[in-house]
Image (cartoon, rainbow, N blue to C red):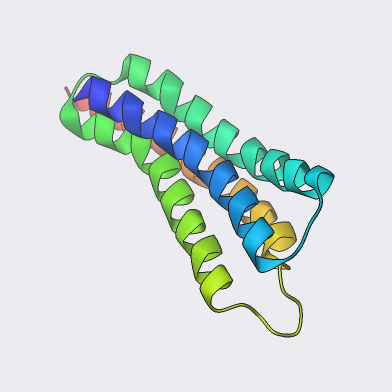
Length: 129
């Protein structure tokens, strides 16, 4: 279970910036520097979430605490990636690609809030053990 959780954490870490970059290429015509910028902007919040999960996985021993440790990066990455893909299929006509600038700010808030909640939850679950 621990090895699977680590792999899912890595997939979540890689999936979000790549999906954001590829969807920006499809949604709006951008140059190489813009794609790299979108990649880095999306890499920052998922890095926070994945690093938090990585350190929590070192402490987690039970299946429930392992699940609590990786829930934040997995949900952030997969939900955000899905949002980017949906916006490629159904773009906003007034301002296409705006989510590539606005969404990372929300992801960052979510990474911090859910990271803190994950820390608390894993510590509680490990204390009960």
